[in-house]
Image (cartoon, rainbow, N blue to C red; front, side):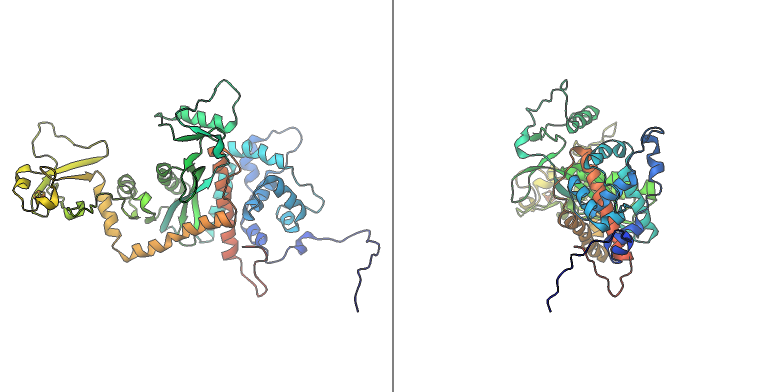
Length: 461
Ligand code: SF4
């Protein structure tokens, strides 16, 4: 028999407990177990007045942001609507059925004001990371580093050639422009103007993407522990290779300072295999570089490459395939010269006399009177990296490096962070920190919460 819904009078009172309506296997229940904001009020106390109307609880704003980043709700206006309607989100934010959800403009005020002044989002990120350490998800033996480009909230049409850009400093400027100009003023050396500068967000870099038109972008740099793929640090930089590589030092030093974590090996791709970077890893930090060496010295025209010349440390010289010496200083100077060039190299050359009479000259230096080899100042560190690359551990590291790429794919596909909503380097910093916090929280919830027989993620992963 077909049933019909009774249109009876609704009861006057309801007995409703929000907690019972959130499934035991909901992702937010797992996240809630690992998010501890008990010290947040103390952290933010200097930024609140002791008098006046009480503000919206900052812990509520952080919880709402966690919901937004965990479930890829990118718009603050939409986030407020979702928290208003979704029972699980309300439960996680400690809001009762009748509690008012903060207005979306409150986020802007706090994000650009108190939270930024106090680096609150980094505080939250570090609290979550401390919990990951407590739970044993960070091994501390191997770290991997990589960067991924994320589109800035800046239109291509608002770009002008770098040589032509001139901001009127006397006019009222938007804060991303002010922030950019302040950074330029604070820089020790004036930088060469980039090819294209955005008038909306000048700190973003004009970046060519393979197979598509160029766009303005920032890079998110992740330093992860390879045991469970926990993000141990994150840094926002303009989408520029040199900035990305340099951010590794900032992140490594910060993790060592704050958490006393220094890995035995660091895994990265060829971008991190420059002589300077390898020198820093090997000589300064005593870390094993599991990084391919950035080497442009190999020749493919049939003549001898750099690798055909053997280095003799004791004699400070190379030996060529003909058995002759290539030295940096054939002449003796009263005041010894380092001979270090602007590119941080030392030039070693054979004697013209040897080369002239050599039967191998056509395969060695057919167009010059003698052969020259440029040796990087950090060549010994490059040699260490070359030796590491021959070990079985290096092959394992190559596979483990994929864990960072998986996190970037997750960031863009699941957390939907393909384009930033906040502008300026600070905006990118805030967004990347929150996204990394959400990824670490999700990781703990997925890995550490026991799954019962009825378990299964009811939400899209
Ligand atoms: S040409 Fe000069 S450097 Fe090259 S193999 Fe002969 S002696 Fe050695």
